[in-house]
Length: 130
Image 1 (tube, helix red, strand yellow):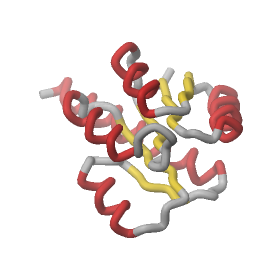
Image 2: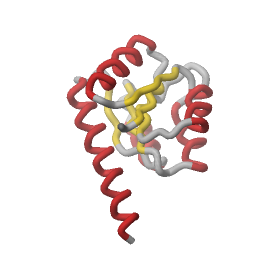
Image 3: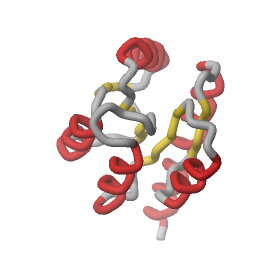
């Protein structure tokens, strides 16, 4: 079962996403601050992070900077209302796997999640074969 961490300051969105993804068979956890997200990543095995860029304590780019110092295995999908092209370019430089603008349909996010996790499992199988 894939583990997904939702990092967003919108508690209602976190709860809804978590519930919807759990029903499909994903294990989810959500946090509403970058500090909590960093703590959780250090203590848990996570396959994918759904990250909002605008957070109350530090922005999502701070999180990306910190997480990429030691961890490049975790897949990251940015989900943001920020339509700024520069933020998309900056996120790409941190190696995010997808960038989705809010509001979005759940089906669009689900397709992105499935694609990114499938890509991740393919990369894992290829590395084991070498």
